[in-house]
Image 1 (cartoon, rainbow over the protein chains, first blue to last red):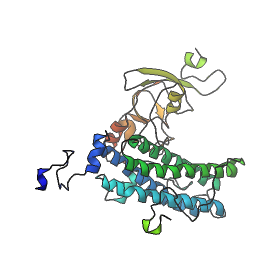
Image 2 (image 1 turned 90 degrees about the vertical axis):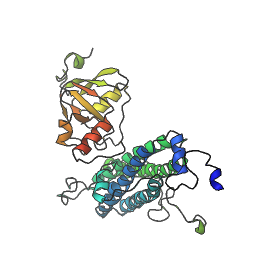
Image 3 (image 1 turned 120 degrees about the vertical axis):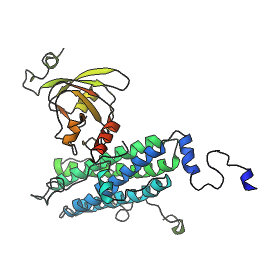
Image 4 (image 1 turned 180 degrees about the horizontal axis):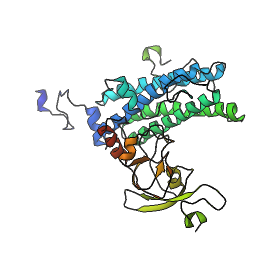
Length: 220
Length: 128
């Protein structure tokens, strides 16, 4: 009979659907899975609630700076993609989104990218924010994201290749975003050239590292 | 010894910002006293002295840089999210805290500060 041959790891019984080998092997590698999940939820909240949502507003106030607006849009949509990319991993690891969006936003690992002049979102801007003001908020938001995803890479390197892969794909784009906003802010605010290597995405929010493409489309 | 170290908490002879002495107690049991100007953040002063101190958002939000304040005064107005209850509970976020007196702090207190927030029903990241 099948149950005469117990599972080789000895930690997950044959046919057991209450435990996952995909989690137990991480524990064997020294990963604190529960802590990792909490960090992933914090980071997901930062992508969705601290940047994607508030970048929507920042983008609206870049009227007249159509080049900035398009680049802000790329960052906005790619941050949403980062949320989408990491979300399944949270559940695979036994976690869950909070059942309240309010709670989700409150626990974000990075501060909200409020429109300048709104007193942290309390009211419409008393004066129209400048493009430099908005680019500064965008830049500092990306810097927090870089530190947050780098931490996940450091925790999972050599131990949890799946989470590492997802986090490093996100980190690639956050690093690009920071470089873009440095280039734009340096010229807008200081009149200085700080080349970033930026070139337009193939389409808005392309997310070349973090978007999962269907195999049925040949990976394109 | 520099003039700032001779006269902690006083303006420098050149009229620059006051300088205080901040003592960091680290988890390994060691303590290190470094000068910190009134116009700089405590984390910057510690790092300038070569201390390895944790931080992440560096905007006074995520609690990774949290310390317990054993003595001294500080200005936390640069933080993005800091509550009166945090101060009452004895915590500071040194990435955005400026000294207002000599200070003594115990570092690596992010989990303690997170738990203190949760006990008071205040928002905090969970993964610190």
